[in-house]
Image (cartoon, rainbow over the protein chains, first blue to last red):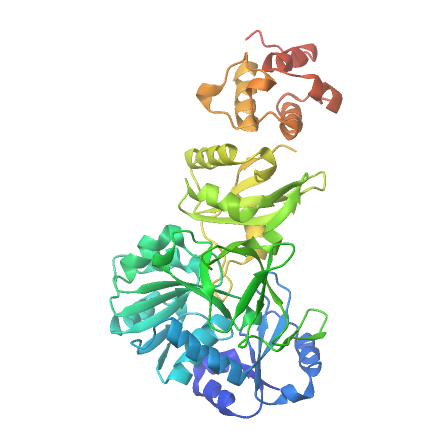
Amino acid sequence: MRILDEKLVRGDITLLSQAWTDERSFCIRPARSGVDEAWLEAALASLPVEFGSAHFALLTSGSTGRPKLVVANKSRSERLARVLDEVQQSQGVEATVVTLPLSYCYALINQWLWAHVMQRKLIMTNGLKAMPQLADVFAEQSAASVCLVGAQVRLLADGLRGRQFPGVIRVHFAGGPFPQTALELVRDLFPNAAIYNNYGCTEAMPRLTLRHVDESEDPSIVGKPLPGISMRSGSAGEILFQSPYGAVGFVDEGAEYVAISESDWVPSGDLGECLPDGMWKIHGRQGQVFKRFGEKISLSQVKDAIAQCWDGEINFYREDDPSGEAGHVLVLQPEPSETQVRGVLKALRKAFPRTHWPLRVEGVSTLSLLPNGKIDAVRLAEESKKNIYWRQRL
Amino acid sequence: MTNREKLRDLLIDVFLLEDDEFDFSLTQEQIETWDSLGTVSMAVGLEEAFGHHMTPEQAVEVESIQGIIDYLTSCGVSFAD
């Protein structure tokens, strides 16, 4: 499997087209993956020989910092790109503006591959790092789409304040919580855009469900499965899926290859349930539901309660308390006033017993984002400790 | 800041009370957030604020704010101010 450096692809996007049409398989190496070279070599060496052609691989570490190499089949992904075109009603979309790295499955499939398969224009940008350039690109469009991560909305709104881009007619969100509380900002920037909440994971390569913004006001409702995809809840409430477009295998941190067949029920990494109308509701990442003193804590529910009185970003990281019991720390962004912190605490007191309260309330002026736009959970824990607004004395 | 004010601020923070909810005559029963974890939090807070370590047994025995004042008074903390 040949390695394709994301940096080179960024300089010459035709390299990706060539690698895709080439029979040989390829792996995109992200510009800043932090993955050990020896690990990547061992991971690639562990792949079955037949993956030497017609496949591609992506490196993911998500917000956990643990490397994973996910392998997919090119033709299966092309089928997904066609399905996405249909369900996203993208027929009238002439171009897609890329603000995320193409080593990120969401941008690669929803944007690059969609444009490649459906013969549309792909417009590369330097993302949110170069706002004036991005504004110019958005302004030039007459019927474009853009894929974003929820955490980018406030940065975009700040960087493009006062501007409107009527030529962007589709805005997709994935890769994290849907920015329900910041929707007005999105609508101000893109007044003509249909907004979609996409849900999936890298193993799904990457889509499982899709919801138009108007179908629900609950950000945790992610819509119905795409045609061909089946989903169910496991015994612990974990979301499992079968997908004809999904990954065919992966190599985990221990450099051990795990095959995925079409009949396997694959965990998405989240907990959730199917509602009576067929829509799926996400209860949070598996690590975001835990027991504290025997009480089941869902950080997604805690977040919903806080969102009633705080319209900034709400994040958590996990930490054990001094007695060794599992707990969580709440991180608000931007930094809250004393009154706002009291408001948040009041909302928590009203909604939950003390077991659900955070060990601390911390604040940061800005959130560190990974290159794919997701919040860097590792840095979140390190940075936010600087500003503690409240703590449980334990 | 007097010791009464110090205690008031601490308990408002520990039990997440509103300013106008607080009263020195409140009992554990009247403070819904004074649960077992709240007792731990209160004991840690008292040690931080007044420098007196409350054993778990002593903490559980206290059932009102007046009980806290009595405990602290027995430790030599004056609430005469």
